[in-house]
Image (cartoon, rainbow, N blue to C red; front, side):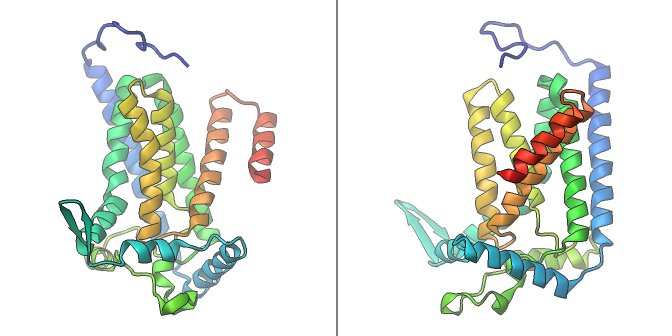
Length: 279
C-alpha cells in the first residue's frame, strides 16, 4: 500500500493552518466527550459480584479445558524474586510492579491521544475510519460489560484454587483505592471481558504497522499490543480469553466501520462476521 508522501525525497508536510489545528482540537474533544460518557455509563452499571464471579469461573473453566490457564504462572514467575539482575542492572520487584501498574493505567491515556494527533496530522484521510473503529469498539465493550459482568483474576482470590495455594496479586489495589477515595467516576471492577486496554492497543498497533512509513513506527506498532498483553496478564487484570474477546470485538468494529464508510456491503459484513465466529 502506498500513501501520499511515501516516496523518498518528497517535501515536508505544509505548515499547519488554523483550520487544521481547530479541526484536530474538535476531533479530540469529540473522543474525549465520548470517553467520559463511556466511563460515566460504565460506572452506573450495577456491581453484581456473584454474577461476575460466576462468569469469571466459567471462563477459567474454559481455559483449563483448553490447557491455556497459565496467567497465574506468568505473574508468579515475574514476581518470584525480590530482585532481578540483568548484568550490571538490578531491578526490584517493587519497581516492576510500579512499571506494570503505570503502563496499564496510563499508557493508553497518553499513547492514544498522541497516536490520534499523529494520525490526524500525517494520515488524515484514515483518521475518521480509525476513530470510528475506536468508538464502535468501546461501545460494543460497554454492552458486553452490561450483559456479561466478569470479575478479573486479581479479585478472585482462593476461588481460583491455584497450585501451591498461590493467590494472584492485586497489584493495582493501592492505586485504585486512592482513586475511589477521590470519587472517580466510571470505575467498575467487573469489566474484564473484553479487555478494552488490549483492544485499543490492537487498533493502534495494526494502524501503525499498516500506515507507518518508518521502521521505528512499525516496530512500535508490533510491540505495543504485545507489551499490553503481557501487562494485563502480569497485573492480574485479565485472562487470556479476555484478550481473545478483544480481538473479536475489534474485528466486528472494523467490519461495522467498513459498512458505515461504504467500503463494505451489508452482505459482506455478515460474511465477515461468520468467518470471525468460525475462527
